[in-house]
Image 1 (tube, rainbow, N blue to C red):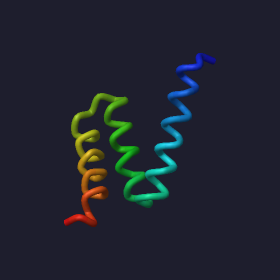
Image 2: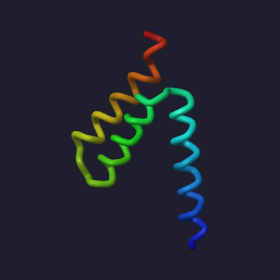
Image 3: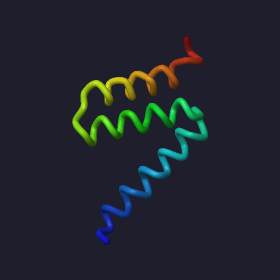
Length: 62
């Protein structure tokens, strides 16, 4: 296995666990929508995921 691929996988899983721990199920759903939208090149799906994550991060400040 390529070292770069392994490192990217570990980084992605770590970020996913952090998002789930910090922001709960809604943050994880936003992260999955963003990743899925980027993977299938769906602008709508990735935009929804980005908005959900942005609202989760700025929610306490508003």
